[in-house]
Amino acid sequence: MTDVATRVTAVIVSFNSASDLATCLASLRAQDLPDDLALRCLVVDNDSTDDSVTVAASILGPDGVIKLSGNAGYAAALNAGAAAAPDADAILILNADTELAPTTVRELAAAATTPGIGIAVPLIIGPGGHVEYTLRRPPTAWRAWIRALTGRSLCSRWPWVDEALTSYADYTAPTRAAWATGAAMYVTRACWGAVGGFDESWFLYSEETDFALRAAALGYALRLAPRAAVRHVGGPGRVEPDLWTLLVINRVIHHRRYAGPLAGTAMYGAMLANEVLRSPFTPAHRRAALELIRGPQRRRPAVIDRLQAHRPMDVAHV
Image 1 (cartoon, one colour):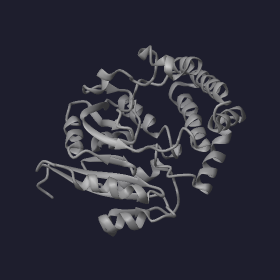
Image 2 (image 1 turned 45 degrees about the horizontal axis):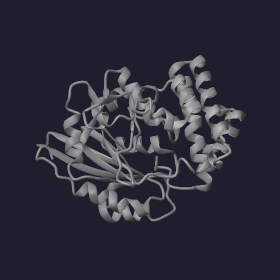
Image 3 (image 1 turned 90 degrees about the vertical axis):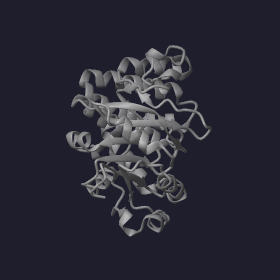
Image 4 (image 1 turned 60 degrees about the horizontal axis):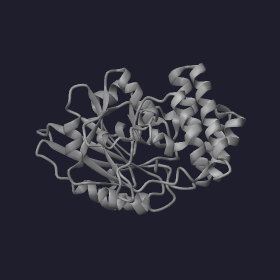
């Protein structure tokens, strides 16, 4: 191990993820790695009530599992995993419901050697086999207002107005982006150390946005590695009311922190308009609209409490 040039630790967050872990870990063990790259796997469990810990330990051994005493959230679990790997040159963040192509780790590691790159992300392949549009421009209130008033289908006709990069060409080249959805992220140790890890106050959602934007401000850009591929089953964040509500609330709170009170108020208006206009269609939009009206900062703790108490799903699925 001492002769290895680059040591990568994959940190997989689990929360009632027993049905997904075997596939994820098998794909990591099957990685085609060059001689100068070593891979270690750690599963950080957010106090699961299923067999997640047993499944992980049976594959990795007891030293490959960190069981937290409670569900502290996704960001806190990632930080715990990184802290347990102080000698790692890079941290590979993975949701439990991911499956890596055999050359994914080597492609991500190669992408991260480009000067100025601190975060490398793969192509994310959805359950239907399609490439998901995971790259993002910086969040702005005006883009959120356009999405709220026109909907996703109309935004797709004018790609430049949407926060998501939706051109096929963006996903066939080593495209740089402001941030990317966080199912899989390769972070260099230098970037991780400069940023100081993930902000644990987010619990779930917006932690990857916050991390990438802070990294960029410190000179560490995010880049797509187009030849790295990760299949992502994905979770029902868009249909489970409290998960969707937390995503919306965190987006509002993050923009206030990131862009200031005036821009934060404009983002609040855009997100509220989006949820109210779509509230007739799903319970998730109705719940989000109601909690936004009550006040995102004030209602956020209650939403998190419900997620922790009722465990509607594996909250590591984002």
